[in-house]
Amino acid sequence: MPLGGWFAALRARLFSVRAIPDPIWRDALAAAPLCAALDGARQQRLRVLCAQFLAHKRFSAEAGAQLDDLRCLLIAQQACLPVLELGFAALHGWREVIVYPGEFRVRHPRQDRSTGVITEQDETLIGEAWARGPVVLSWASVSHDLAHPHDGFNVVVHEIAHKLDQLDGAMDGVPALPPGLSRHVWLDVFQRAFDHLQRQLDNGQHGAIDAYAATNPEEYFAVTSELHFSRPVQLAQAAPEVARLLTGLYGAPPAALVP
Image (cartoon, rainbow, N blue to C red):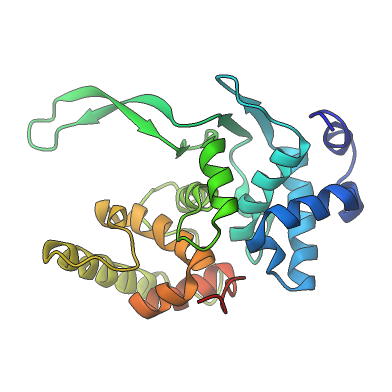
């Protein structure tokens, strides 16, 4: 079904569980093992969140990317996994998902910390989350993550983690925390874990947490968020306190029993 069928009708009326037809929901679950691994109650909650996401976010295809209803729903599923416990309000403040067929190039200003000189720098990316702007994704990377759900990577989860991080106005690896999670404890645990990863890498040791996480605290949060959903056992072994806090934020990972 081309984009603009049930999806357009969904945007034009109040969302509900029934707003996503059973056949396309089943197709999406079959293509998204992390979502299929949820228990029945959480699948129902995810379905409601996806209906809200599709009703309130605008999808744009760039550079020849192909989007249809199923692809939009698959992106919505991955985007809503991190807010199963937080609710749809955690995704406020932005309205657009931009999809490229593969990697895309961006140009951003960079300031040299020692000189203060600002230069423009080109980067090749598979995902990006603009502050109060769109989430930008490579469909090739989204598709790869769906096909390999337990390899430790999920570009949509990564970028949604950045969106959650931005909610309090600062990208610093500390999202807006729900009741029951202490900001002081979060800062302490994540800082110690971040420092530990950097020491490991300095000593030539590589483990379950990808080296990109050592770039800065915000990337550490986003990378470990990917692991929470895709390799939770390995995350719990590498950084048990981080894994515990992420479970407090996101709920139990759907792949908790996957080796």
